[in-house]
Length: 170
Image 1 (cartoon, helix red, strand yellow):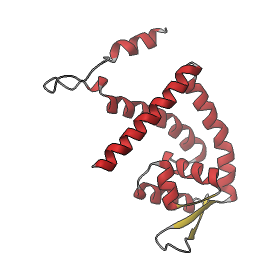
Image 2 (tube, helix red, strand yellow; image 1 turned 180 degrees about the horizontal axis):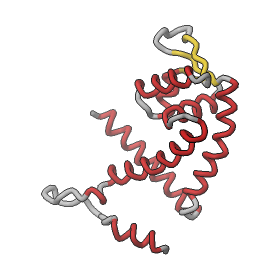
Image 3 (cartoon, rainbow, N blue to C red; image 1 turned 30 degrees about the vertical axis):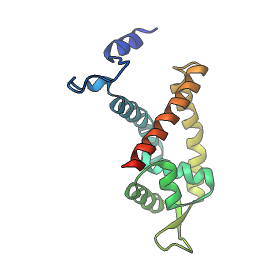
Image 4 (cartoon, helix red, strand yellow; image 1 turned 135 degrees about the vertical axis):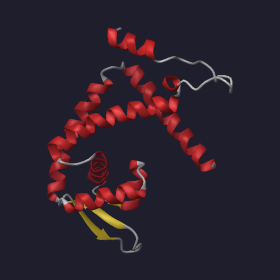
């Protein structure tokens, strides 16, 4: 274990059970907070690379990635696949369209929706970013064994599903 890993393990208190309701909330041990910190750190890595090199934000990249993966998407499909809210997707779509990276057409059956397609310039950026995304993923996953990676994937799936269940019950 590296000195950095030892230090990080020492800094993050581990809990094996739910504390008493009167116990103070230790933010560094609070799962939602920890997930948020990791998410922000990883998003920051992507954002700095994509902003500097391609002039696009994380929200814009997510739209480009989803539309690039599926050729055409409706705005609603982008919202569902990215997990971003409607306003954030709408703003990213407008910015991408203004930059000439995304083509927007009215949806024939839903006037509130649009059909989105990458322009040639958008496709070119998508093709440049994909290898960079794979490289960054590999660099991050390099901290894990194959077994840990599979375990992390399962854990993230479970937490994501549970969050959806909790949200649908509210």
